[in-house]
Amino acid sequence: MVSGNPTIVLVHGAFADGSGFNAVVKRLVADGYPVVAAPNPLRGLAFDAANVKALLETIEGPIVLVGHSYGGAVISAAAEGNANVKALVYLAAFVPDTGESAQALVEKFPGSTVGESLKPVPLPDGQVDLYIDPRVFHPHFAADVSEEEATLYSITQRPATGAALGEPAAGPQAWQTIPSYNLISGADRIIPPATQEFMAQRSGAKTQVVEGASHMVFVSRPGATVALIETAVQEQARPR
Image (cartoon, rainbow, N blue to C red; front, side, top):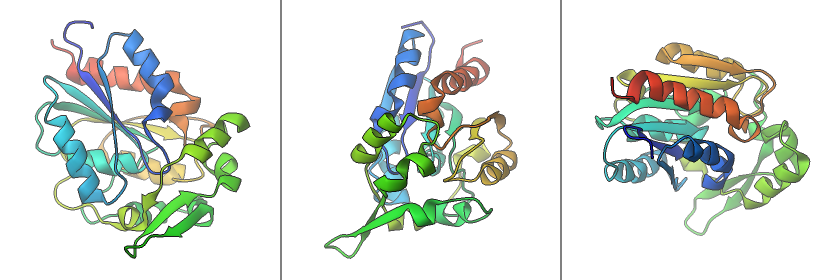
């Protein structure tokens, strides 16, 4: 590893797992970065953030924390109070303020297909797991990924509970004190670009719009994704 490089911690969102970051991980490792793909339980925002927070506390040295979609809400809570986290990078992600949920934010501006895309699975404990219906996964979630690859992601997706997506963010949010960077997917049919731009502007993030990119921007545009992460490293986490 290159001396002085921070650890890049990647947090996936709903309907996904860490393997979606494979192309990004390959590039970051080749560039000399230690990388951790954090498992996101997708059971509830406070619960998920506590699990990621516990993982962060075991990592020595500076961290650049990256979240996709619902993972953005998780990192906003998990990084709070951790002085090692030097930058937050949001990839087509939710950046909630206190009291806001992913569900409320996705409805803030028109254009999301998420409501019509969900396939609920009732659980024995009364909760509901939510999946993206495989029949619409490609056009709604991953339009700029090949149909073959989108099919694989639709089959291997992990569900989030309805409670997780509806749970409001509680307490201070890390983006209020930690520099943030926001990759906006310009053709997103899950989180409308207008919603992403609203959250990025509110947080004071350094922003890059990837025109034509779907919600899976980190899969379809790994080069742009890595470039923004490495910009965050250079500006916030590299020793001077």
